Image (cartoon, rainbow, N blue to C red; front, side):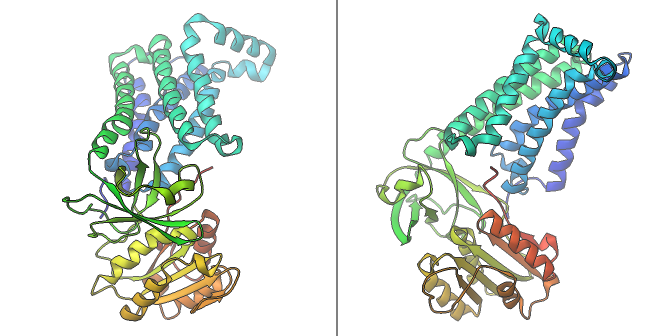
Length: 441
């Protein structure tokens, strides 16, 4: 099983931490200000708490994110970032709320004076940095900002924004003058910095000494490669089928790594990855020197089956999404009590149906169901024409009880969303349909 706290406990801790400044402010004993002032202060306290929390749930902290999964973690990170930016923008405006409604000209003059005041400069800088971070995140793909540069910029500017925001709160905050809230802000900033130091300094140093090397690089199909890693004289990496690793080949910067799903089964001394040529790193993946160093940060992810699972398992893969599905397939094939297992696998052409011989052989030996789909070009043995639509999913579900079946789906995001909608129409409960996304642009 994956490591980490239960998702409900992580959610409760997040809500408690986000509300803690408001609770401390209420308990400070300070007499309340005017309604608009209290609203502005509350927005400031809540947004700063969210800003500091971004470092906790965006880091690779398995205690926090291990059982939540990268999908929900990154959704929360993105949504919280947008929410706190909106709250920070409303924070100064709230103090002038009555004037904004009755005398907008005077209110605008008041905002200009507020932003120009010397004692407000750290808050203005924090606001500017935060807006840059959010804008760069939302527009990264559109403006062509490289992933590695964006990660470094995102972290550095985010920490700077948090530091200026804490300085602003301690300098002008009415409630932050009290020791409990002052300690909360300073402690939160220290933990935010510690999360970055752990993620980008200590963990890379540890992972770089683990001894992983490139053992083999083999072509699988057009633009697809299998990369196998090994570390001689070391025990196999403990992981659950369906999890992924962050890989950095050679001596790359701590922020210059990428997530790849593990295709091998748990217990295999080698780690196998299916990598498609799609970017700066992967474009030269086929020329990786055998024996070259690899930094491996693993395991991560909650796209796993409970080992006590006794329901039928429906595996669905599209394109390079076969990697974690293959790990699950191989793991299930090793279990004497796997039960009903069926795999639906689609690709653009037959030559992109990777591991077809292994899948066919395992299906015959273990009695697993195998459904292959090809979009274009000649068909291969056992494949039918078309996309992964409701018709082939209905065929794969034939004879299975939808309420006693779990579906594991991996592939391009549009495909996963379409497949999930089709499975719901076929009777699977939403909680029984599992997938993880890595792309949030």
